[in-house]
Amino acid sequence: MIGAGPGDPGLLTRKAERILGLADVVFYDALVDRSILSLVKPGAELIPVGKRGGKPSPKQKEINKLLIQKARAGKVVARLKGGDPFVLGRGAEEALALVRRGVKIELVPGVTSAIAAPTYAGIPLTHRDFASSFSVITGQEDPAKTESGIDWKALASGKGTLVFLMGMANLDKITGNLTRAGLSPRTPVGIVENGTYPFQRTVIGDLQDISRRARKTGIKPPAVIIVGEVVRLREKMNWFEKKPLFGKKIVITRAREQASYLSELLQESGAWTLEFPTIEILGPRQCTSLDRAIGKISSFDWLVLTSPNGVRGLIGRMLDLDRDLRDLKGVKIAVIGPATRDELGWWGIKAEVMPARYYSKELPRAMGGKNIRGQRILLARSEQADPDLNRALRAAGAVVTEAICYRTARVKKVDPEVKKMVACGDFDGITFTSSSTVNNFMGIMGKPRAQRLLKGKLVAAIGEVTARALRENQVQAGIVARRPTIPDLAEAIIKHY
Ligand code: SAH
Image 1 (cartoon, protein in one colour):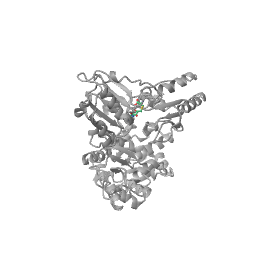
Image 2: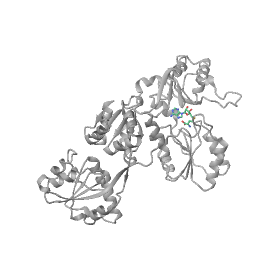
Image 3: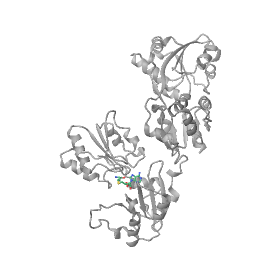
Image 4: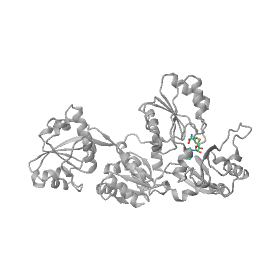
């Protein structure tokens, strides 16, 4: 049984991540984030068992039965629970049922929403001057109980901070009980909805007016309710909701393998990123040109690499063919862009040349101008590469051989849920990192609809070539990165907001 944390996937523990990668079957609650589920191993069985949007949830007995069945079949079963498994939410009942039936269990704590949601709202649960303890209380007592298990008098002492989970439906009752038990109606109260998510919302008030404020803002579960003087500290400590891209939904159209870096940069600034890959990176249809080039790789004077995919394509194939990377010794290497240089560096190989600007004509100049006359150059590229670079090298007198290392294709399967969000225009900005992301986006959404969707949104292009592809589709880029790199693109978006 594993705590999945409150929402932000970064709050998952390393142990939880490791076990998720091993499990054969994963049972998960409604409040577990999708990106956490993407950590399971390929082929693992995913079983949802949570309540969601009014649909009936499986009965606890049925869940237990299924868990036991899978465990007895010799499977490694992971039971993912939101937050910490044993902070309310019936984790203990489930664990006991397993133990009673002889199932061996392991328990992995998680970061509870009771602490994380207040922290992300800038509310510390303790502070020497305001509270030296805190209590976590259910806002939804078992309706079958005849007598309240909650000692309202003790809670209303005003000494410790109170955190109510599952309390939104009973907000009036909770504030009423506390005031009647003696807590001042002026005691500060904070409510944090969807804590730690990029769409977190917070409402602040006091015991007397918080119900009205909650109704006015339409704040909904899942939410935690925090009662106590510490709530005042939010004024100074609010940090998450103040990030430059907080609350902004940004669509990323890059290939899945490449999206995460841009995603992370934007998320660090508070954005909510929607990965909507429009292209995928595939091996070349035929390896003939590549294999031929690899066969005589040491005979080239130069190797030119224009993208990290090209690096992976060439080196991957060399290894497939059982070649040694030392065969590249003596071949000078020119790269376009720091990402290509870094990918090469990852293999322990240094590039001699990287032009300061990334245009085709810059490369021959950076490679020594006249001195490349007669030089044998291997240009490792994608199937769809722009012929400009080859032309520029030939114009400088070089003898150019091309090898196709990879190709990009329009994705075959689009995540229907993400597509739905994009199709409703439910986003603030969208990033395009190559002309093929533009053209495929148009293809997937249909051009007239795509044009309509992009109106009024922030359209960010990584460079001039991409911006031109947008113009050819009658879309004006609102932002073009200063240089065509991912960090420059992220910076431009942050500056814009
Ligand atoms: N075991 C969980 C709590 C389960 S009870 C934990 O440790 O977090 C479910 C309640 O948790 C919800 O009704 C809500 O009050 C709270 N909750 C869970 N995730 C939340 C989130 N991201 N933001 C605010 N409250 C959350």
